[in-house]
Length: 520
Image 1 (cartoon, rainbow, N blue to C red):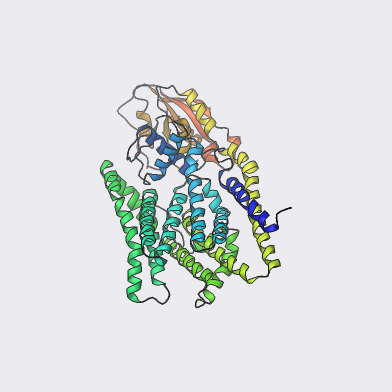
Image 2: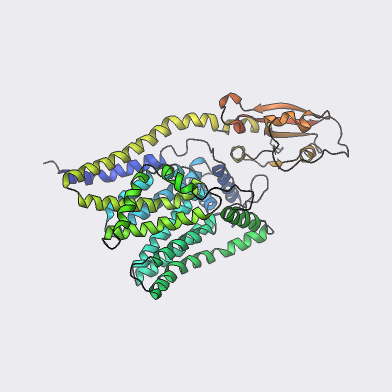
């Protein structure tokens, strides 16, 4: 006797979901170069921690201390590389923490669904999240934004539990909230407690029919663990600032945190509406359902059905995170990722309520449409991974250029990156290097041995020392410019041996501004 339709669906659901998650997040995760400077920089810092276990802060190959981010993501990559038996983290070790963090985000939504008595809603929300366009891509890139999203998602789920539970469940959720905040702080700094505090205050203030004393009491429960988690991380930041003689505070807090939030630094500022306009596009396809879900949730706030109440919590979560990020002057779509789980949760609540209002035939049709849409997204990513990414990889990958440089530069010599910041190339070289900006600095590299091995953009060869009568250069390696026309910063890299033809004189070249000259 064949099983009925419902039994067949239950039997096939688990393997189908597992296959979809693998194809979306893990399929061919390591089979492309580290195109993003964030990935290569993460690999360089993790490699330092493998050689120098400790608290850090780490050093880049040219001896520059890492001042842009706290070290948790680098620790995770280094630990993953150690588990994989690697002395130098490979692409899989570098990307695996972000991929796992994406699964954690989806898992938190599944937990929230189970905790509210609606496991199907949690599964739908988790799969919607994993099939949001930009979320899927960031799950496959080693950026700290996905790790931060996992910490924020876990923390917000804990806040929802704190708001509704009492006793041991509330204390356990408070401990989880503090831990989530600490993870977020050690991943990306003060942004984590700011986002969690905003969500906590929102959940406390918009509690239905609550008195002022109840609002204050809930706000304390929802925000105090956030403060505790942030304070627990303070010793590392103080130690990092002491080891870098104040440079960590100047670079990380003032430039990359305060400067991005309030503006007034060299970082670019963006209009306040950027996330509201571009956000729906990067959250496709499920952002198309967000507007009807929002209308459904707020239309009858007095109708406190469980699904609508859960959706309102998600709206507060979504509005708080989006509001804080919108207030910041510096914006990019990657920063909006912590809001994606809230959007998926709201849409899943609406979808479940809609299912309950439909007849059996229409209910089956909409479920089939939902599954088909998710399958199409997974199939689209498979096409992109199997055919589009290999073509891009041939154009972008710098591993071959790094092998040519290592073949040409003797092992006892140190390559010089001149007016070049190229973390991916430094990652594939996997050797010490020096970075020089000004022409006098480059000239000093030839003082001791009379020669220097210089990696620089091709256009520099028509400037400065390369056309001075007292110097001569020889091309040793170059990246074929025909590989790409759209990425000249990669195609035009060259390795030359710069030689001093006469002894150094006391006359030095005038220094140039510490910025890359414009192309001629």
